[in-house]
Length: 251
Image (cartoon, rainbow, N blue to C red):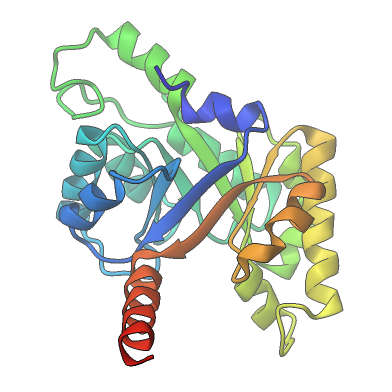
């Protein structure tokens, strides 16, 4: 049986996943047939409502595929919905300060001031799982990823990385590029910021994750400690597959 994604991340195993931009359980089902380690619904930048998230999580669970949800904003209601649907974990955009990281962890966990409990959810087995069992399973399996994509977050990265309960720091390289007023993702300021995230992650024992536009860059960042790579998307696969088909047919 495959070990929980949370444990695989903690052990530094290289995890390769992709973003899902299309709110369709069929897309998730098809990608569930691949060797990708996980999928990430992009509810921040794609039109995922509650029903779409629910259907896609159902498909992923049916295929035995770990599924993260990048919520539109890291508020308790969005986090609760995704986790109650049965998502493996949360990717929270724009975590800028340690207080925001602590609020993220609290919203993902059961306990005083944290995630609200409902035994009727898919995550809880639709009332078939004892409360104590569900609480233990959630604590052992829920993945909490803080997305680092603002200059303020880079300035506070040591404090953010020190927050207990954050499983991974995920670099939002494009947002950092724009925030620094840079014209290229390879701008020295952007590279230096990513290196600071990697160094902080290593010091505090946090998994480092990132999206990379160039797959050939994976070895470089893996050498600096990154092990979670969410690469490409279903849209990208459609576009590149169609382009390759046309090129080959017209050759």
